[in-house]
Length: 104
Image (cartoon, rainbow, N blue to C red; front, side):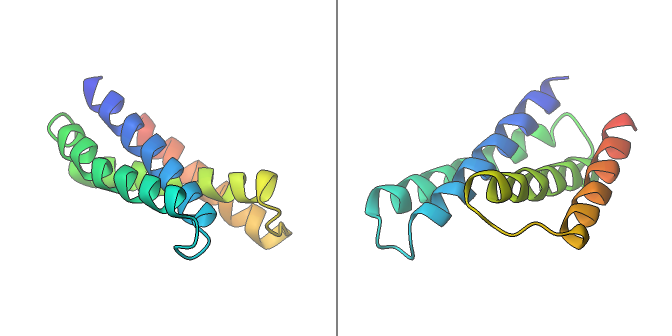
């Protein structure tokens, strides 16, 4: 259970880091750039702690899939990124994959 707590923090910090990366506007927004770098520095620590309690392949797949899914949804909902059937279908497949891995 504690592995999932660390993994959840890694996911949330990664998502926040990706949002700040977008907001950094190519290094022109210094506070957002610094926030992204700090968040990205903390993520590996959380992943290292998570894999002490769970399989590395499962942890990494859940982390990567969840981050992709959440960042894409945030992009669509808040950053005016395009949404089309192909993108939604791919995100649905990722969600199914992450759900199956979490159930194992």
